[in-house]
Length: 322
Ligand code: GDD
Image (cartoon, rainbow, N blue to C red; front, side):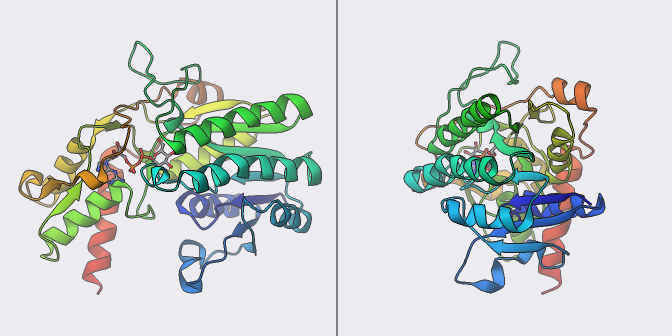
């Protein structure tokens, strides 16, 4: 039986990945952060047969301790301060966690289980303002990040290469474009829009405040993207892969779809609040998934519409069962 170790196991991706690996017959382990509201910290993973220790990317001793206990075959580093706009409010914490924290976990990995395989949650936010002439971002696209979050992820991406080359570690980057689900935090735009629209439909709210509605994102489903993470670690050689749907839509398009589905016109309900704008916007993301589809046979199973419909259904059930 293989053992997987997941940082960020209590998050959206961590919980889908834990479920997927349990289905594959893995022993699934991980770390969770200490939190003052104990009831909330394992919400997404409460029903799963997994083992967790307390730990934090900023505390290397906790990482080494956990790796010594579990001796994993595969390490998935999903923990991060993952909110791009908030990274401008807490830039130092973001960099400590997402950049220095990756040095910490790489050191712990090298010291304790160097024969294991390692996955780093790299991000399309690393591309920032950079787009190839054909309108896509891909593994070879230059990186020009536009946020503390994006800068921290570029550092992590590069240091993974360094550990791969210098110490011959099986260290990989998945460059994931936006991926969502009903388990998404409700301050990310998809879940914020769906939850807000459902509240308006049910008479529980009378407006939805958003930031930039004219930015474009390539949105997939977390369920599909954790399968890509696992596939990446099944290869003989370490590598980097873009994981994306290849289709891009604006926040406005998304609002139009979600509100229309609820027989509402988003223009009657959505207002802009400058508080949700970013110091430097990233206007456009669209990933070219050719490498992972051709080399690893990965393909997304969810369409954008199926993803949104599942999220609408989720929030309808939440409110109607109250
Ligand atoms: N969160 C948020 N809230 N975003 C808004 C809002 C709002 O009220 N209004 C407009 N947006 C726009 C943002 O400006 C951005 O262009 C887009 O919606 C998506 O924002 P988020 O859902 O917050 O995601 P993100 O693209 O910034 O980052 C996510 O995807 C990255 C991969 O590209 C996060 O999951 C990152 O951790 C991930 O690396």
